[in-house]
Image 1: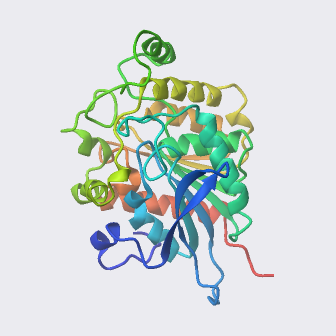
Image 2: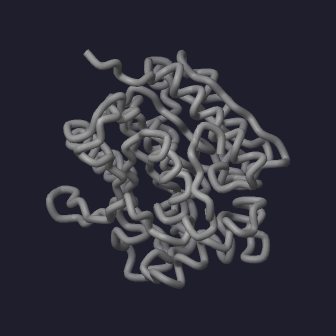
Length: 328
């Protein structure tokens, strides 16, 4: 892991809550329990923290999948926090069926992130960095573009800025609306795999080429059944299209002055690389790091040759755009 002091037994780390981390619950809107995990340097530590980093995961994700990376950033000097999103993982469900992912509106997630960010930055040292993967990347970018959060830098791993589907891009929003109109909007939009056209048999290679890291997900779901979540509903897909349309509004991304690193792979079978590249071109202070067939969707959980390059790119970007605060 480039630039990070890596523990000796990374496989054990991936399946253990690190001793330096603390799990707790944050209440959004003063009533909705949102799981969080924090790595904080001891108060007596004489070394100034590198800064603080907030990580938000993807759809049906949970922070346990990223313990290896989050703990690595902590050992690099960052204070680290990660959240689950409302209505998934250990933060409850929207539908009565706990296996179907749903959301009343993506703005709820934007509000949660904005509320948490406002309180979080008051308690941790700067610079303050926001990192999002997939759905988390979508929400982090939208929140920053809508001036709901003001990070020193943004890092977006395979952000969900468009879908990989045989349905033409311009037709996708209308198709989602149609499916909600003619069928039960709360039923699952696909079966078996991680996204439309995927299957349980191919799900692993859709996400990562690293079999060990892929197996960690099933291990955590067996240990903590509340983490398990299946496909999204058609209503979720419709509302995702609405949120994508907000990001596509002319002038929105063009006005964002936050330095932004986007990482994507042309071989992604879930989110459209072309839309990631299109967003990077619209952002005035963006850098794009592209991968090919060697990388699948979960770049932070890929095999070491790819993951090392991902982490190195993030470290180099943050060193340039969010340097440590110098002591007075």
